Image 1 (tube, rainbow, N blue to C red):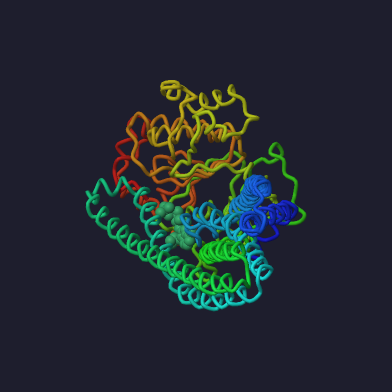
Image 2: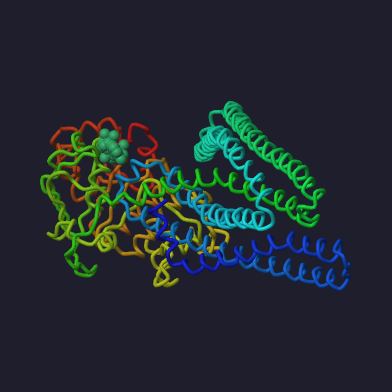
Length: 594
Ligand SMILES: Nc1ncnc2c1ncn2[C@@H]1O[C@H](COP(=O)(O)OP(=O)(O)OP(=O)(O)O)[C@@H](O)[C@H]1O
């Protein structure tokens, strides 16, 4: 919580304003019974009844109520404004902090949990500022003012009234532990529901394909039922607590009627004073009730603040060096070199061992190997998503660690198996929302990769809005859009993780043509899942268990008769060059996926 408090500093004067307005509101509340007491004792039951005096007090009463209303209204606005501004800033910082993390951070932290951090946890912390703080100030001040007013009226009866304080404390303590555990149970069960929902919605295709709907619905029902039970329990404890306080309040009123009534009969105090006392005792319980209810808010805000703090305290694993080399896109030719690179996601379990190779500018290089051989890891290192434990990765002779990450990611373009499309139009997705790239450039890029006609056929052409992840496009269309994106952003080096999905022969041909277009004039490293993709590559690098076991052209490798030749033989592809339109036969063969 202390970590998040500095966020409130710019709003210091706002909080002082809230404090002042709360004080005004409370004062108007406390004065009300006192005014009635004056009316009763001086003007109604006094020796000389005074109608004019009653009227004046009624008018003052009305004005005070209005002042209180206005103060309350302004205070709420000011507090909400400040609270929400603080949360906006915390949320933004949290998001930019998460954005700056290296990929190993995302390996360690489940996406669902990060989403909860940014959305729910910040919301819960905002309740600290808007509810807990308010209650502490408003209700705390109320209690003090009411106690002060009671002692001002009559010290003896006020002292009797104070006897209830330890009783209130005892009841609160007794209920607090139970309330806290009930509250935590409800939260845990609610997050179980959220996690279950997230997982199921993401995997709905599989659930439907395997007819798992009834089973999942039963599992969901069970979670729901457990949440209901926890909620009802929490509510019933809370209701019991409130009723206990209410009962205590009524007993206290009865006691004041008894003690105060006796004092009135013995003419120790006036009737108006008794009225004011009863009124204060009743008002006394409202803030106490409110403060104790805020206990939960404080608890959950502290838990949420701790979770946010934990994320904010993680330093990005990969950072720019203090004196980066200035590389401007135009000056980089695109020469890539790996020199004795060893890397493991866990330092003691290397998945790449002593990898060395170099790629000349503009070359087209294929990476081939069985699943888990380390192909994607090579690419992740080049994009500096991770850092190797040993060796160097050089771009035009410059160690990638010496290049600003922002610059490096402009120089290296990435097309992944699962093309990432964002909610927005087709054009937005091609230019990745960069407003400096004009519509004509977007169209030109789409034409280059052969996506223009396909996009034109979409309902609104380039303005067609894409659903989440591009669900309204076919796999091939998504691939072509990602190629157009590369042409538009024009990186020097392209890393392409070929989609494993089978495409029909026509789309396959389009995608292959797109790939040829996009790799023109730039260094291209392709993780090939279909050997047909890399048959014409300048060089093919064959990986096995984290090591480079062979490299050469398609023909050289076949001649070598090693792993590549075996993979090739298994794939069942014909030795003769395959014209694009017939490549589907190989692609649709599952053995072809290597
Ligand atoms: N984020 C990660 N955290 C820990 N281990 C990982 C991670 N990503 C990959 N690995 C492991 O590293 C090894 C190499 O994986 P990599 O993804 O580079 O292989 P690949 O050749 O690209 O496989 P595929 O063709 O199936 O994509 C595998 O043993 C894999 O389990």
